[in-house]
Image 1 (cartoon, rainbow, N blue to C red):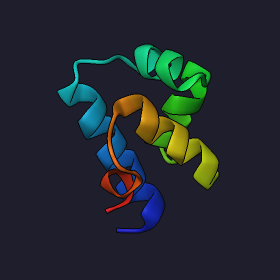
Image 2 (cartoon, rainbow, N blue to C red):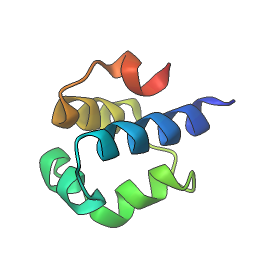
Image 3 (cartoon, one colour):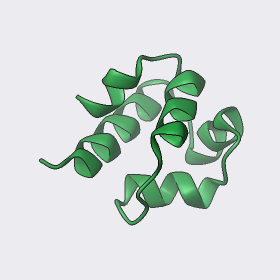
Image 4 (cartoon, rainbow, N blue to C red):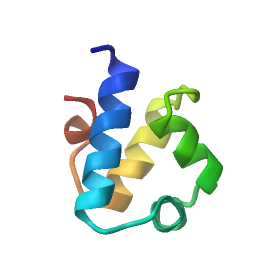
Length: 67
């Protein structure tokens, strides 16, 4: 599994565990909902800064999204 696939899988799993919609995560991370969708569908290649924003919004470590 490549890093984008791991990120997409982990991000979606953690988001669903919290009961959040893509829109709720986008609001918390101050990103657009379509960008969150693009990351989860592996059509966007986010910067490490964006991944960090998502991790902070979800209250998890950066490694939780990438491992």
